[in-house]
Image (cartoon, rainbow, N blue to C red):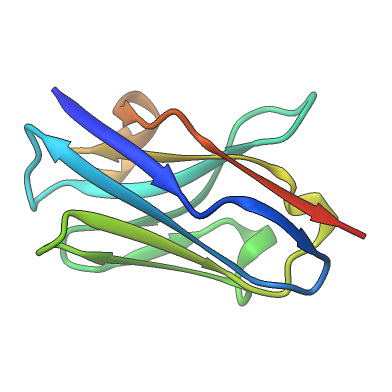
Length: 119
């Protein structure tokens, strides 16, 4: 089994920055893809960013140019650096891991961390 624990969420003003971290443990492989999803109240869950084992990245159009995903395989950790935050970025952010990026929504999920952006 895989355990994922997110940290770094909180309350920030619009225009501010936050960096989320996700530490993975258990039956993990450095070949795994990792990513971040989010779910805002009353909205569907959406993919925010993903990163492959070879560091290829993909972003939702709504966060391109503002968010950056990275990973440290030595620490089994993935990060999401969020800048120029907007109130519409308010959501619970989930860390996910799977054997490939197209399987992330069916992979292992962390419990989530709340990000609230005030206007």
